[in-house]
Length: 394
Image (tube, rainbow, N blue to C red; front, side, top):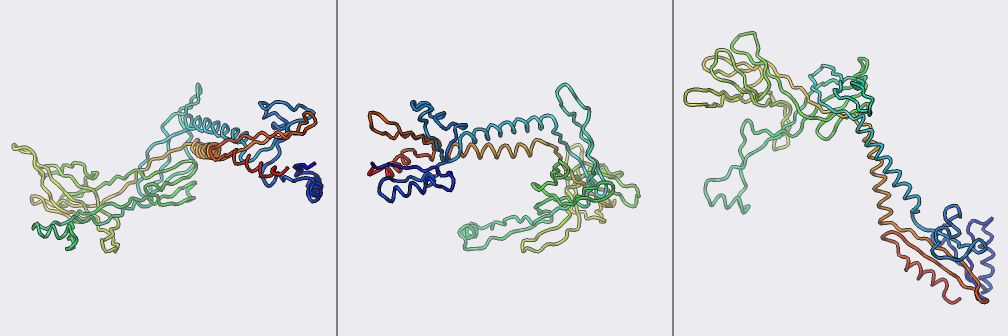
């Protein structure tokens, strides 16, 4: 009688495959190599012998179901994504209890320690302050990069405007002295420990410094100017874009954003800017308030206002950084990637379970096969058709 033989692939020296091959060569059987289907045996400890196919019924210890599976094991995927959720929970706890953040302002050349001002939350236990890190930050230089910002100069004549719009005439642009657009802000930082530099990096927006569990982001800057009047040696300190009252001169002055750093021209050339500010004066009288533009004031230069010289003596740029210490973030990243990957495999992958058993009823031998599939890409019907191809002709 013809037979379908499925040799055990892990028998000693693969002798079952050799024995089955001899019968197949004699035309007495067909050989189905489970390895060609990609299935692996499921031992009884993991559900083999019918533990996972109890709804099929029958069998028993004398004639148990032989169970095989293929694809990503749902059992292990389930364990993995539950483990990922546990990691997320631990990460949230670490973030909630130990996260600190704040802002610091760095002056050029002055080492600054990070002194957290938040309490650690440890349930009923509370420590009044975090431990101060054993390193300091030093700002070597604050760097600003500008590019020219031209304004489109529309022709006054309608015909010329139409020609520009249709591309028949090249548009023209005009540039003003203050037509500078900030392209980037950077801070050249050093990490100092025991008076020795242990790390250096120039940070910018979206490119922070990470050291000692802390992350430092470029948040902003402060510009401090020193202004003098005539030959008076006493200098007045002010921040840009804040009002300043100068002795002996009517009104209040406002010194605009300090333009310093490098400038990239429209033709691609880069040049060093001579520091300058634009100055305005506001005067209040009986008719209300009026503001006048006093023009451009360069570093070490002066402008004359009502016969008095307003001097631009010096300038300093401080870097404002935001910092964050969050020990839960690395764990949350790993857990998030793990959960997303495992859930994707569960949803879009495929997993099959195949159980078979041979039983004898009224002198006839019957092959019982049970196939189950999970996952969007699983196709149990295709597997049944493939198995039917092997069984054809028996």
